Image 1: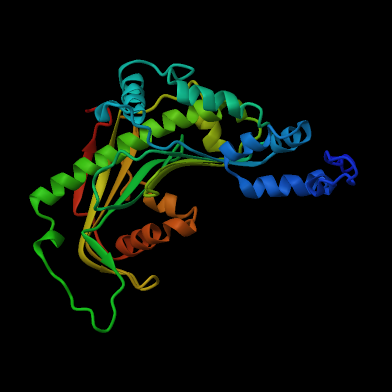
Image 2 (image 1 turned 120 degrees about the vertical axis):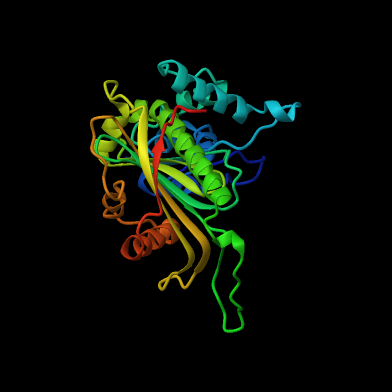
Length: 327
């Protein structure tokens, strides 16, 4: 890239023209600044400053998109809820269309087309999960990886010398708690599946450059991750059919002490759900060990530490049959 000579700004009569110092920066340094900026909305605004900015901005290799809650006059008919209902109907009741009907997503997809060198893409959508006991959930889908893991806890804290142990009935796996967490896990699994469907439409214009993509919720509790070219190719493969059923395992520990983070979880529950077809044999660990071999990210360290501790020291409490299409 070559940068143009600095252009003087307009000045009043008798004054020396002021040099716009940002024009002294080479394109390579401008691209580094825009890459650090990352936010797609702000980058689109920057691209309007000048033709040079527009050219450099659209070479940014990393993008972050966020869709905040937008409420209409009727609280029950806000845009995210309408979109979520549309996606669920589109996914479960008829084949997915090539493009979304939602004006919000269509405008985003169109605006991203000019970013030709995107290697990593992160999308944040409003969260629809109401269960406060959910700490983290993580999902990865593809030919070789079809799993969603959800971590629940009644409470989590780092004890001090003056901390007293608290034991209550909420840490026991009662039938009510079991049914509640299974229902919430199923909702997370459906939400992860819907978000994968969204991701497919957003990334299809970047299939040649993209190396990693994720779609998370606004609460930062959960995400769907696509890592590497193989998973992205699986995502965009029109011949790849999503299995209609699955199975899962549930682990529950009344009191879980984590040596690395020094956290103590009361009423900890892990639900792992694997989406599969009828011909696939069940994995004893639902494929979680395969997921863990990929390593963990810093913001999900608690989830991975819990998984490691539970699989090494505890057997599953329940086996589950999952039907993601059930409403």
